[in-house]
Image 1 (cartoon, rainbow, N blue to C red):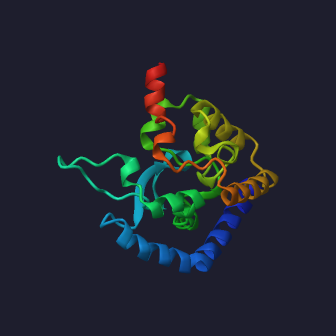
Image 2 (cartoon, rainbow, N blue to C red; image 1 turned 135 degrees about the vertical axis):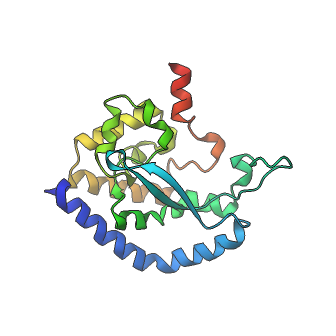
Length: 206
């Protein structure tokens, strides 16, 4: 009952209300990014695999400019990350546009994070279970280390969530997520400290 109906019902109600209540903040941030991002735009769009690996466009506030060097190549991420972008990442404000993804039914509040398309060939059969549910803004992996845990642990936590999903688990994840956001726990702002990409890591170890 919870997985088949109530979870989606709660997602729609709370995401719709969230968009309405947070619309002043979303508008203010959007206007600020028009100037801060130096013409790079306000929103970041990227195709990601959702439930059953069906692609959808994930939405985020854009935290980096698109500045290039003299040869026309994009500058390193750390140089393009704006101060506003750092603040948005540290407070998770950059995730607010994903409320629209939830309203549309592409995402849930809680579930495995939607990762890059190019990672799909590198999951083993057990890890692919993470795509049997809608991806989430937060999840079991996010409250247990987020980007500071290794890929094997992170993907194992995603599968653990899929196999043990319940209302009780989701409520716990919500409260732990709020605590982590307030305390900025396990949030990686410096792009140089992020995990190596999954495909690169598994190519190296294979």
